Image 1 (tube, rainbow over the protein chains, first blue to last red):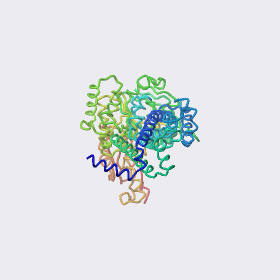
Image 2 (tube, each protein chain N blue to C red):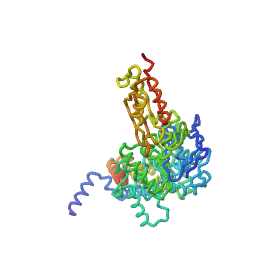
Image 3 (cartoon, protein in one colour):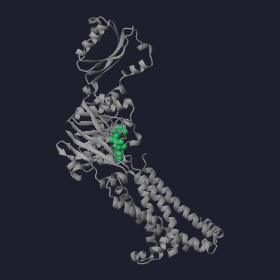
Image 4 (cartoon, rainbow over the protein chains, first blue to last red):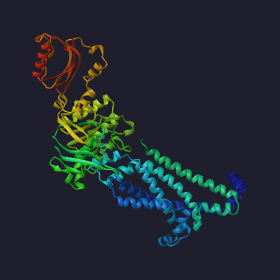
Length: 234
Length: 348
Ligand SMILES: Nc1ncnc2c1ncn2[C@@H]1O[C@H](COP(=O)(O)OP(=O)(O)OP(=O)(O)O)[C@@H](O)[C@H]1O
Ligand SMILES: [Mg+2]
């Protein structure tokens, strides 16, 4: 058994020497990526869900029609969506410093990641909720449900599957964005690949990083599909 | 009782304003089945939606059981809505909830315990005949079953009124009939007032006590079903009758010069229409005996609206001119509508 493991490690040394020579750095990168994605994703999920719901219900014909609120949010979401993430990263430095006290490292990356993700996720939620049939909402209204009840018992409940799909896409997207967070010293897998794989031309590092990302994305996708499937009664 | 007073609803779109409902006055009595019939776009849906204020009328008042809904604050209105059930053409069930959960939806904040809710749900399932579908999801049901669930859900809070917007329009004829029977049953058993919106004459015939005919947002004719359909005043009402009656086919036959309708000199085609509920006399044999004419029934379409026959007969009568005139006068005197459709008496 141990023999087999040693043989395997020797083989890895041969196959991916530049990775095996820095396992700790590699694992820290993974941890940094997961931390960034986890925290920023968690915050973005709550904010995006709330904003997506608000946009949906305040829209013309919505259950709480408020045109000023709708148009303000709509413009804001569009505005932030049109800024490339790398610019957002730089542009938000003062704000980041003000909110979390530091603009670098994993902490410094959270704020821009949230800003980069929330608008996208808001649109995903909006699209998910738009799948809820207008007639079903009306049926709820005809049974005396108020706007809040409709949000929780109709919109959100009916679109668990669609929201899960939106969340999966957003999470995968977020992993992509987190790769750029190296620019503010947050590390992560993207930074690991650039620093060693690209700058030092250690190709095996690049490949291993890519494989790791593929693996993470797949886990998220499979998990997302599973939830979406158990909630689909179409 | 539902009273609509000068109810109007207009929709403002970018270019223009559409008056979907214009100045409608209606009184629907407690316990009756009231039909509103009209072709697509007549404003029927908009009108029923004005009753529970899913659509807020731009003018007029909606009064239900003495309470003016149009004057209620939002919270009160929501409470009142629990006592006005509504079902839809597309059923509008919650796809993510089982049948039982759909039915229990409106009971959530009713103050009932979990157990009472479960009991009530089962009771409602029994009422609509779906005891065995409790755990099914809507996607696993047929259209008729879905509508039964929708009916059960609409009845959960014991409403006094049930609004049905084209509730049978996406069902096949047989299922339509079973749903209509169920509605009539509920009307009798629970004494619930039912308002039925439809573009199908058959629906009105089957279950309605009174009917309003709607065209361009206005109610153009209204009354108990028999009088409206026995003696329609408006062309549109006649059009509806024609959709289920064969009598109008005669015009097509005459136009195509069918052998059935080809007349010999001295003959004419007349159409008899029952205008009163008490027609049980032997009309045809009486006129042929009393006036010495031949009456050949070529076409007939009589059906029963409740317990009254409606429809008529198409006859070819032959005989002496004055005898025919006499027979027609006699029929008219009996309050039978007589219309001479084609006349060859002048022909030599
Ligand atoms: N929300 C709306 N905005 C603008 N116009 C509307 C709206 N709802 C209905 N209308 C218009 O009002 C008119 C009446 O519509 P309504 O749906 O009440 O007709 P209907 O008699 O129910 O027809 P159908 O049998 O096709 O359901 C139509 O001309 C329709 O285009
Ligand atoms: Mg309609």
